[in-house]
Length: 278
Image: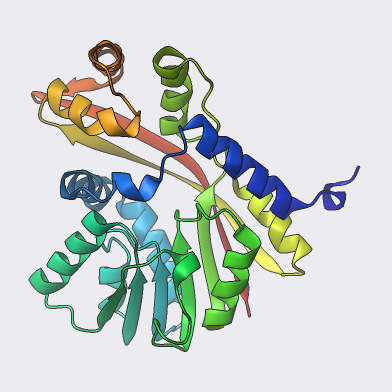
């Protein structure tokens, strides 16, 4: 069997099913619904992910795009700096904690050319919910859709020029933690989401000619102390019993380094930047 004999969209769907089952069928949007978790992510991204954000900004602004659609915008890590460079940005984000932080930051920075759509991309109506056409459609590390081909076709339909995708190329450091913890906590193996090799297979079978370039980034999450870290990761790792919380605390105590009285988790990921014209 050659690479193109496989149905890559089916591979994506099957891996997403395995991922969700291994995580107990949970919805990741629920995790980011809390203001506290959204703020911890935002602080990490704004303070330690500058090179990653700068790379995406360069990709988009170097092509002189004026109107941008940002899918899975989170707390505005990319949307807000983009809004300061282009005519208009629409941010699509389903998690309440994330979009509340985005709106707060819009007010704080007096950003008025950014509109928000509090929906999943799958539920967005291109005609009713958006303010297109958009020169650029961006989806940065938010490709957790079950039917990725349908999601990509919808992105292409929303763009009048180019689509930019950023996704993982193999396991990130946090997936390594999941795979170490889940057998201890839940007596099962953790399955990662499909990576960029599957994504590129889907694009190839769609007949899309794309450009792809690998990159990596490092960041960190800071916690005032170990209990704060346990509180943050309790939900992420689906911890429900005192026994499992104790196991999580022991793991984090060994994993998080100490720095200036804080506990710090170092984060690393290999990624792929993919873009194509429509």
